[in-house]
Amino acid sequence: MRVLSGMRPTGRLHLGHYHGVLKNWVKLQTEYECFFFVADWHALTTHYEDPQIMEESIWDMVVDWLAAGIDSGTATLFIQSRILSHAELHVLLSMVTPLSWLERVPSYKDQQAELKDRDLLTYGFLGYPLLQSADILAYRAGIVPVGEDQVAHVELTREIARRFNHLYGREPDYENRAEEAIKKMGKKNAKLYRDLRTAYLEQGNHEALDTAHALLERQKNIALGDKERLFGYLEGGGKIILPEPKALLTLAPKMPGLDGRKMSKSYNNVISLREPPVEVEKKFRTMPTDPARVHRSDPGNPDKCPVWDFHLIYSDGEKKDWVQKGCRSAKIGCLECKQVIIDAVLAELKPIQERAAELSRDPLAIKNIIAEGCKRAQATAEATMAEVRDAIGLNYS
Ligand code: TRP
Ligand code: SF4
Image 1 (cartoon, rainbow, N blue to C red):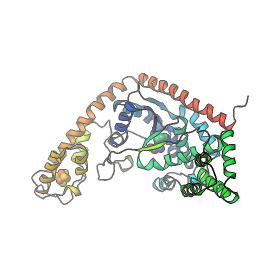
Image 2 (image 1 turned 90 degrees about the vertical axis):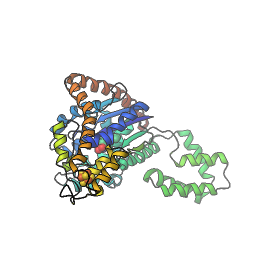
Image 3 (image 1 turned 60 degrees about the horizontal axis):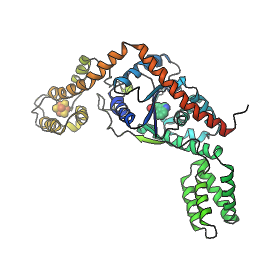
Image 4 (image 1 turned 30 degrees about the vertical axis):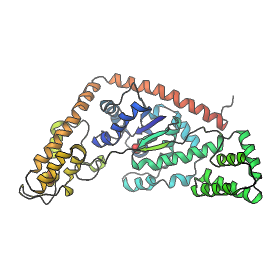
């Protein structure tokens, strides 16, 4: 099982990335063959007017990955734009991708609405999820760890793979035998079967698949072997060139930001992984608490306080109990309550920052890690592409 995931280089990594993504990657790298990459082309779909942010972010991002515990000896780390196979597969997949599949991906309209200051009515932005499909399929990844907002992209990838396999993965003998079996169902049922199969394979219509299963179940005059052949044929049959990946949802609870919303650069409420300790302290000391707690003697309610969300992540049962009781009875002050979080965050960041400082002293070593990773990625993606070209019939000599 191969794992693949990417991250866009659009700024400094923060605690949200650490808890939501990196800790998970660190765990996965011990269990699977992992490919982690810098999705710079994806960043370009939204930042094509200010691409300089990418160069600034790329190397810092790789340093942060390594500092957070990603092991370049185990996982393959690379930069998307250095592996041209992603672009080649993207263009080939684009040939078989209905426009409507891209237009209905929820993030397409959502992001356009959210990033109003950018013109996202571009061909590249519409193709964002398809480029992601190419990223995944080029490595024939089985598992794609992503956040909730990306699940629809993995779902699209599955449908694209299915359609591709259906169009280019058929084995002539298999097909002939399946076609013979279809005829045995009689004219009317044969047509129905064919229509349902097309609806599933080409449009991803799952109801059609269920109806077809029921139709096959009802057939009395075809042999069991033929029946099984027709079940397989319904789901593509033939050869699987591009396997369908599965999304692996990160289970970590949402990292809260300093204002009660989720931690995100666009809300300006983050603690970056490189945040100097004095800044960490300052940011927590000045962050809002339960607005009802104006004076030290006013009791508070943790449920109405964004600091409590941090206790949910950083504090054990005993500490949480101390906060609940102390806050509601005004026995503890907010600064005292925050200090527990400050200590926990500083302790978490310390080893990361030490490693990052050390790694930053040797930029050449980082570039070598990426060069090495690109080589491995290139070889893996090229193996897929050779089969893809072959299947489409592009290997003319
Ligand atoms: N779109 C992803 C994000 O914004 C980044 C990404 C690009 C990705 N290609 C990918 C993630 C392939 C998983 C697999 O987070
Ligand atoms: Fe929030 Fe803690 Fe203050 Fe209660 S004591 S209001 S939980 S910071």
